[in-house]
Image 1 (cartoon, helix red, strand yellow):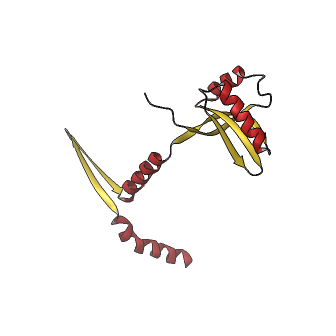
Image 2: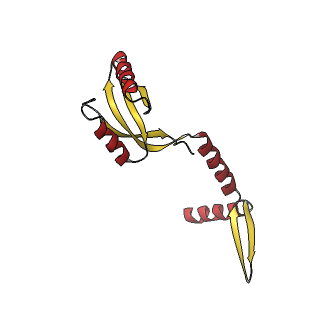
Image 3: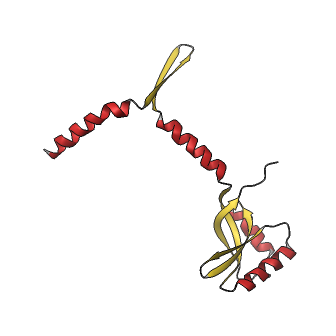
Length: 139
């Protein structure tokens, strides 16, 4: 009995669902292709494009060189790093109750590993973390 009610309900919604579709016909030499597509797909594509335009980051890697609860120490570590490596971006973030200093915008773990190797000994507790990185500059 319950299954019949659900089936009848679904059938009653069918005209509403089918009215949201758009027919696209493409002609190519000897063949014709007809596609039926829901118009809401175009809306979703537009929303995704807008979101991608607003988001200026991508998944990547950074090297974390400090983690602790002392803001002054985190600022000193960041300043020290920036003085030694001005070409590499550094980021100070706070996630209660700790401060983190992370450096670089590496797209691959291999790039991050190479940089970590180059600063070996300067920051003994440093390690690689996955993070959202800034998009690379297009030239």
